Image 1 (cartoon, one colour):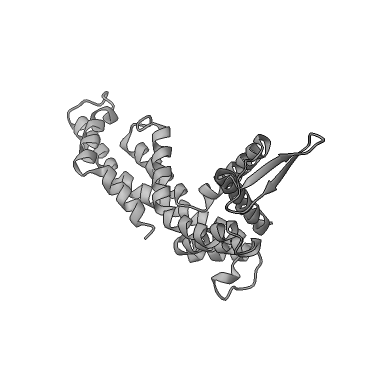
Image 2: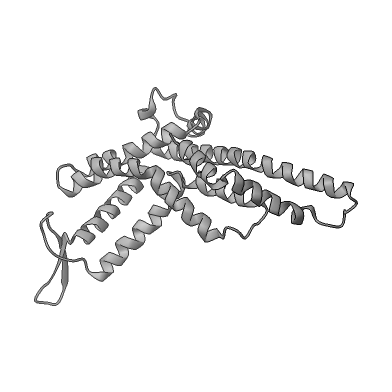
Length: 253
């Protein structure tokens, strides 16, 4: 089933690419029926609107799962969300800004992997040089290589045991449906570790401000109201956004 889903995703991507390049032609017969035919790379034509909508919706449905579970998006969005909570302003930056920045950074981190998958799998398949199986293998290998670089051995061993598999000899013996959840679990672990480290300096500022207010007898004044400007000033002085983004990107090298 996982291999079948991967092939369906690849075929949907190929179909969308063919639609954009005008490689699919529709003809209308004498009876009024519509026939959809594909042509080569030099062909001219368009998909029917119904087929276009179907391919787009299918690719979006499967693409969201790939984006969340097989890329760097999970780690990045969790770290940025925890940073926002650590600063103490849950509404700033807004959630769309956090999500958008996470998507941009994911695109930056994953671009070499996606380019390799396109060059080794999708493009040769569109050119008619390889078959479906070779296209799937060529597209999924770069993603598997990326995930193997980031996954923890303990998480991978956990899912191998739960799958009741024999001890794998190398990475090729580990199926994708075992690798993906292990990779997602590793991403969650690393994201929370980075988030905990981000909380420490802001927590120290909160403790110092609370101690000073208690010493001055201003116990009725919420410490977070006083500490917020100091936390923002500290974050700006150390160029916090640059440090966080640089740390996130470098964590995948």
